[in-house]
Amino acid sequence: MLITNIGELVTNAPREAVSVTSPGPFDMIADAAVVLEAGRVAWTGPAARAPAADEAVDAAGRTVLPGFVDSHAHLVFAGERGDEFAARMAGLPYSAGGIRSTVAATRAASDGELRANLARLAREMLAQGTTTFECKSGYGLTVPDEARSVALASEFTAEVSYLGAHVVPPDFDGDSAGYVDLVCGDMLAACAPYARWVDVFCERGAFGADEARSVLRAGESAGLQARVHANQLGPGPGVQVAVEAEAASADHCTFLTDADVDALASSGGTVATLLPAVEFSTRQPYPDARRLLAAGVTVAIASDCNPGSCFTSSMPLCVALAVREMHLTTAEAVWAATAGGARALRRTDVGHLGVGARADLIMLEAPSHSYLAYRPGVPLIAAVWRAGERVV
Image (cartoon, rainbow, N blue to C red; front, side):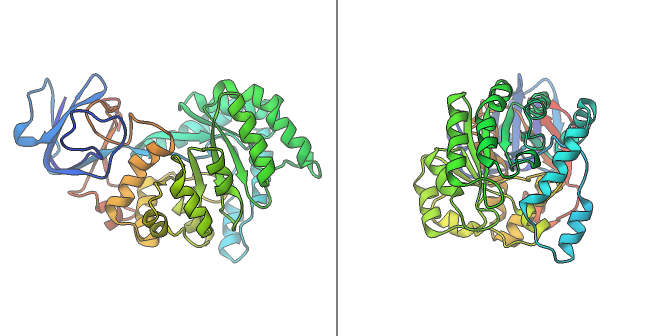
């Protein structure tokens, strides 16, 4: 299939390369076309040089870009926390303790209720251009509840994170060591077959550095790769723990020291995943994205969709916030939401439209990628293709 008459084609791929093995720097082609074949990108270039195809779609000057890659989301849950949000907006500070209310609701929900809510949120993401997403457990915090959470998540995405180490549940009050033993033992054994990643909330009110290291080491022994919730609520050891573990990403990165930035910059590939909608929803300071980029750190943007600190699934909103509040350029923000997310998931097949990439792409009702920030809050997704099939 040929999509032609594209006003602006964002590829995130070197123009002269026949194929690419990973997302490259932001790049776009004006007056462009793209050919999709067998679920992959087969050709990109100027529309005037486009080859013939069995089917053609006229983009009528619209923008086409890679599907968004949302590398941080918590979608397996029940209940809601609207009252908590209202209280926070009235001046009460956010803390990790609110997670416990979602844990209670999730434990009480049936598999069918959890699956239906997850399916609804996945459809919501897709309608807003997200074609790849990561999904965490972390609202069950018992062996059977965490196991069913990762099993349900695996029905919707290959990027499943085991987050048994989200907070210490009420049934282990005063015995965090005992809970860490459970997370590293029976709970991990039950969850590892469904997961690709192991995650830990290394933060005050959650888990300390040594506890986080134990969880990540146990996950690695079970064949899972590391990710870390780091430095969200204040300065702490999370980023250093992530880099030591060679984690794919350190997520949040709101409060960083110079040593944290240096560690990320010199790491072997730990991405700083920024979650601007969290700061929007909690009124915390935004991460200093320019400081990270100036140091040479790879930056991704993700939604952190969850019922407590950030109940949005909108990657376009995250792009707009990154531009307006974190001072990214429109190109940097779009790259971070596509290729950056792919780097945070260590994926080479998504986040770009180089030849051979999976044909995940979105068409905007706009002539430029900049409209994602220029027209915030406006539904700009005109069409979505996933693996070459139009799904929106």
